[in-house]
Image (cartoon, rainbow, N blue to C red):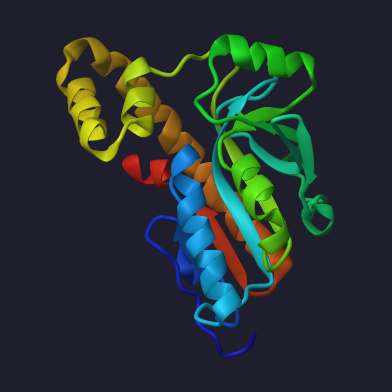
Length: 235
C-alpha cells in the first residue's frame, strides 16, 4: 500500500526500521478474559467500514513454555491452537521458513497455567500455552475479516509458577485489581519474584520486537497487531 505511513502504539516495533509503504496498526486487546470485548468492538468497526480492513491480523504476546527445551525469549509461530477440546488452524505458511521461529501447536486456557497444567500440556505435545487466541477464534473466528497469525515469545519456562498476586491482579475486577497490584508491589516478600519476572519480560520483549519486525516485512502488506496489555507493564 504505497504512500501509507506506519503507525504503532508505543513499544511494539521501531517505526524507523520498516519501509514507509507498510501500514501497521497495533491494537491493545488486554490479557485473557479481558480481550474478547475489545476484539469484538474492533471487528464490528471493520464490518461497518469505520476501521480499514487489514490484510492480516497478528496476535502477538507472551506464552508459557510446555516443553523443556524452550527458554525465555524463544519465539513460536503457532500452526494451530487448541481450546476447550476444539482445534483452530492458524495461518503460518508464508512465514514458516523464518529460522528464528519454532513452528508447532499451542494450547489456549482461560487463566495463567500452573506448573502442573503445563506439565499435562507437555504430554499432549503442545509447545506452549496462552490465554487469548482460543477465546477469539471460538467466539469470533467466523467474523474475522482476514487470516490470523499468532506469534508468541516465551516468558516463563516449563516448571515456573507465576507469583499468585500477579494472577489475582490480572483477573480480578477493576477495583480489586488495583488492590492486588499494590499489595504485590508493597509487600517485600514479593519483590524477589517481581524482579525476576521483570528481567524475564525485558528479555522476552526484545526478542518479540525483533520477530514482529521480520514477520511484518515478510507479509509486506497492511497488518493489524493484537498486542497484549501485560507487555506494557514492563516497557
